[in-house]
Length: 368
Ligand code: ATP
Image 1 (tube, protein in one colour):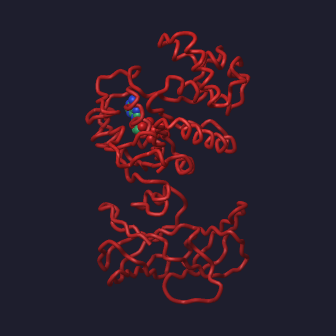
Image 2 (cartoon, rainbow, N blue to C red):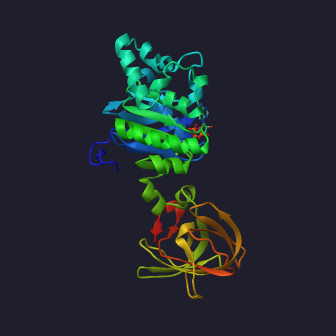
Image 3 (spheres, rainbow, N blue to C red):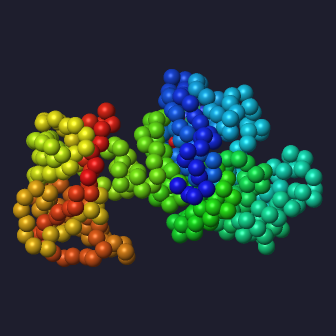
């Protein structure tokens, strides 16, 4: 957590058993979630998982079918959107093209009938915050994509909401600009300490920006944790697969004694791993290995936790080289390494920092 967040404090925002149905389709399914004050929180999931619907219910554009949303001690039911202390940042194309930057930013304040002097001060302040003070008189069409995005951000911050909602805020920007803008967004949140809730399907964006991430699927939350926890200790195969790259091997437990478990995999090799949840002989499991946890054995080795294969494909990415290794069984394994190799055939092995997912329905996970 960032130092200004107090995880022991009463959550600032609570979704309590929130369900949203459209006809008989359940977009959000009995979802509960707590968010702290000043937190940068990300809702991460594939298209259609219900993340925007959740945000829209908080903003007041949609009503929950059942459940409650409590913000800063106040039940949001019956409170119209314009009276909620939240603001939604829309994509930059929602700017008014015929208005200058400063008029765009002042728009919401004018509607609130803020006094002229105060309004001018406020506009100047937020434009400074997004580093656009020299662009106040320009029209949106005279700005770059990134600058337009910052105007949209300034506009949504001008009213000083308690919670800023960002729905795919950087989706319209190209990769390089998106990365730059990510840093600006993080920096801004750092300065303001406003609670930010961002919706994204981009796992890198969520990992870069958020204090905590909720991974969503089919209207439910699968895991809420810090980026490092989500990556290192995903609680299901779905989460492991969604966040970062993985190799997944299906297998069957051959034996489980003490804190060790032996798994026979479909990849034609055996795995010995530590276990911290009960498993039974014969149980079906998924073994999940991150590409960067694999390494090429320097000398021939035998035993469990060794795969044999040939280099199938190499892609150079600068800091790492990505390999596809074809196992004798035909399965392709992804490997990421700092140094490239031309060695083939080869043996792959790994430290025990990989994880096994048992029994998806029960949500049991064995790490390491
Ligand atoms: P995306 O990233 O594509 O915006 P999302 O995760 O934000 O996806 P939502 O917009 O929350 O998804 O939609 C969740 C599901 O609810 C989708 O299947 C969508 O078709 C459905 N849905 C959303 N709004 C309505 C509506 N007004 N009427 C009927 N179905 C809707």
